[in-house]
Image 1: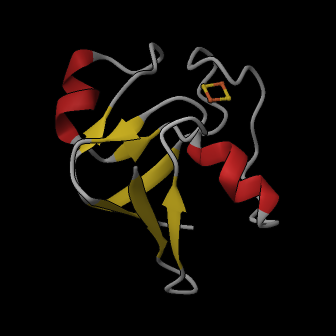
Image 2: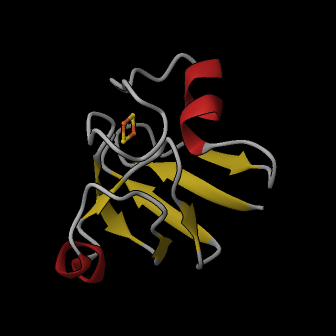
Amino acid sequence: AFEVQLASSGDIIEIPADRTVLDVLMERDVDVPFSCEEGVCGTCAVRLLEGEPDHRDVFMTEAEHAANEEFAPCCSRAKSKRLVLDI
Ligand code: FES
């Protein structure tokens, strides 16, 4: 498990190993647009402010993954304990 922090509210949300960030955010009524939920379309991309993601999407290039500026909550996870997202 890891946690995400929402920059707007400061809320810290635990993401269990068997759920996606998108799932948990939706359950909490955090509005993130999405479409494929498979890491393909890029609709769900959010700006990453802090933390080291474990990118699982395929819409970003390797260079974009390395830059760690965006994060796909429908599929990607975290290598660090916490990610801070610009939502
Ligand atoms: Fe398509 Fe996340 S919803 S990449």
